[in-house]
Image (cartoon, rainbow, N blue to C red; front, top):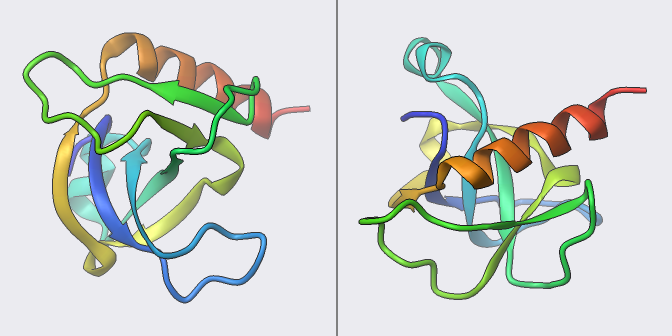
Length: 112
């Protein structure tokens, strides 16, 4: 599992305001660490617009990737560690421009 890949993930059980249910999520942790650990850090995706800097960023897939079922937004505030056993089907890979926006949004969200 590599940084920038999108998978369907079972996020249940969840408690409000956490995002739950089966949904796509974007891996944001680095690929080398992902190979060594039994978990990855992911940002869940939602189909609820609009884009709200730095909390919700629209995601586009790299050319050649499958399409997401709906227009999708990374919910930065939902960033979380996820056990690999929760991860289901591979969906695609985020494009470079989306990953750059996600990096900037995560940094902004997690810093003072």
